[in-house]
Image (cartoon, rainbow, N blue to C red; front, side, top):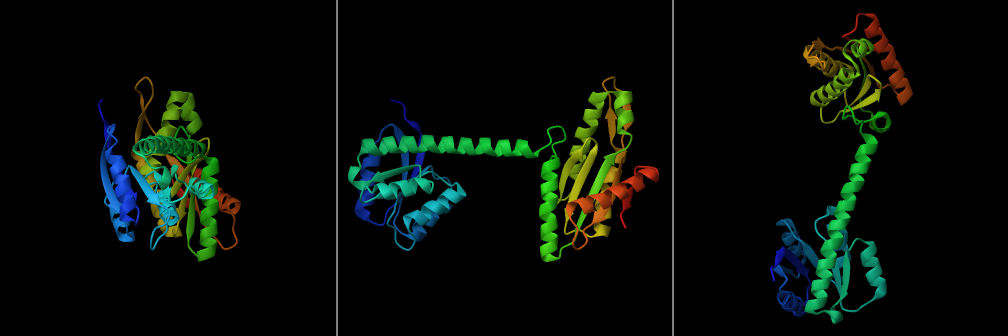
Length: 307
C-alpha cells in the first residue's frame, strides 16, 4: 500500500517512558511516513515549534514549567498546528475543556495503541484542514462584507468605521488626523460620452491609483458613487496636502480608453480637513465636503483645505 504524505509529529511529554510508548506505537503505523520529534522540557518544545513546520502535536496535559493547556492556548493562537491532548486518565471534564480550548483531539494514555493513534491522527488532521478552510471562508466573507467589489477599496460602512476608530485614537492620544474627500471631475459626462462600462473602468482605475499612492498606514474607501474618502492617521494638514497633491497629479496624467479605443483623461478634486478637539466623523466629513465644493467651484482638478 502506498504511503500518504510525510508527517512531522511532535510528542510533548516529560515522562521518557510515555514518550517511548508513543514512539513505539507511531512506528508501527505503516500507512504514513512519520518524522517524530520528542520534547520533554519547555525549551525543547519551544525550539521544535520555532524550527518550522509541525503537522501534528501530541501534548501531555501535565507538563513542567508550562502546562499542556498553556501550550495548547499558545499553539492555537498562532495557528501553528493541530493539537491532540494526552492525559494519564480519561477524565471527561478535561477532554471537554481541551476541545473547548481548541484541541482537535483527546486521548487517555491508558487507551493508546497503534490503531488508536492512527485513527486519532487521521481524524485530527482532517478536522484541522476543515477548521482552516472554515477560517479562510470566514475571512473571505468578512473581506467581501468590507470591500467595494468594483474599486477594491473599503466600502462606505468599512471606511466610516475606520474613521471612527482613528478619531477615537486621535482623541485619546492627542494625535493628528486628516481626511481627504475626493470626487471624480465630470463623471456624469464621462458616462454619457464614453458609456457606463468606461465609467466603471474609471472607478476601478481610481481605486488602483489610490491604493498605489497612499501609505500603508492610510485607508481609502468608496464613500458613494464617484466620491472617495482617504483617512490619514497621524498626519498634519501640510502632510495631508502633500499626499493629496501627489494623488491628484497621478490621476491627472493617467489615460483611459473606451470600448472603441478612444483615449480620454480623468481628473479629481479633493477637499481636506484635519481633526479638531471634540469633533466627530460627521463634522470632519462636512468640513472636507465644503473644501471639496470650493475645489469644484475654483475650476476642478485641485485640492482645497477646510478652515
